[in-house]
Amino acid sequence: MLNLYNSLGKKMEEFHPVNPDVVNIFTCGPSVYQRSHIGNFRTFLFEDILIRYLEFLGYKVQRGMNFTDIEDKALKEAHRKKTSLRELTSENIETFFGEMQTLKMKIPDYLPRASEHVDDAVRIIGQLMKQGVAYRYGNNIYFDPLKFPGFGKIYGLDMTQWPSKKIRFHRDTYSGLRWNRGDFILWHGCRADDLVCWDSEVGSGWPAWNIQDPSMVSHYFDEPLSIYCGGIDNLIRHHDYSAAILESIRPYPMSRFWLHCRHLFVNGKKMSKGAGDIIYVDTLLQQGYAKEEIRFFLIYGHYGKQLNYRDEVMEKSANRLRTVRDRIGEISRKAGTETESEEITSRRIETAFMEHMDNDLDVKRAFDSVASLLDGISPERLRAEEAAAIMAAIRKIDFVMQVLI
Image (cartoon, rainbow, N blue to C red):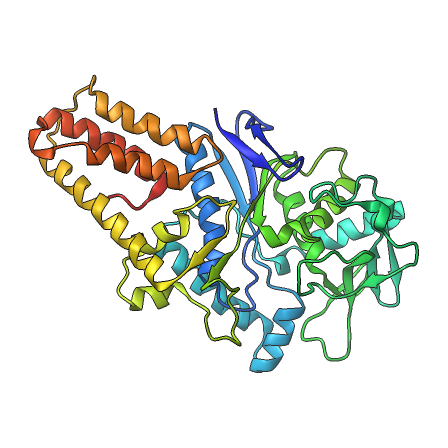
């Protein structure tokens, strides 16, 4: 049985979907004011592994992933580059699709842009204002967390520390992993220099970042999600904001499980343009790494633990995969067209893989266990039927991993 670490409750839980017929999942997509780097793709690949493993287990999965194409940073970047917001974000979305294909990622069922769901955001804001949970201040509209019982439950926020003085936070995002103890913005009223504005029932402006995910989730899913995923930074402010918004207008939880992926650092530090250490997928391709080796490096480690990129670690990881792929190639060359139905090694391979994947998607131990079993095989001694059975097991596993064959 699959067990996952649920950020809501901070414990391992046996996975049961809300709807046994389909596992509904929403994952935070890229902010497309800039290109996604390998740190971003670490999170997206963890989510890809999750989706694939659920399908491996026999679940039908329906997934949504958003593009954040309206936010403070996007407007600022478009102004700096003297281009339109649409041109800026569309170029980065096109690049993202190409890199998804390179890294063998499944394309989600729904890929909405925030800019396509402004009407949904306006509808939700109107409901929140009628309930008295949201209010207008100047041209902006804010959400009052003190009006939502249980605010901060995903993070585990101590609300006794909330200030009694009214404080408003008007930006979409803030640097640093700290809580903004005050009211957060839902709607930016138009300013004279804004590149985009929508005329709506709540005024002229544009939806703030934290209303965007609820607007898209509510459009595509009309029941609690089974799983909501994102990077660990979303556990500060963002996901609790999203849940408070949507649960204010719906009589059920936003999601049963909340999963968060830890960051990827470079040489022990966060990537930054200023330091000149941002690494993109094509950076590694240009260094001669195969796309499977890049994917492998980014998934070879538990998603709940920080991953650190160093040149020597990348090379070691690539060599590890090459060795295993060479052994699989030797077995494949021995395989016939018929399989040995009672072949013990093939069943042990699949069992070892599942044992560790069922333990909160422990890809590293799952891979290492399979590799250890392959190391114990002498391909030259295999009968064609035995080799074919082993290859059938490898192909099943590689539906999830996408790096072995």
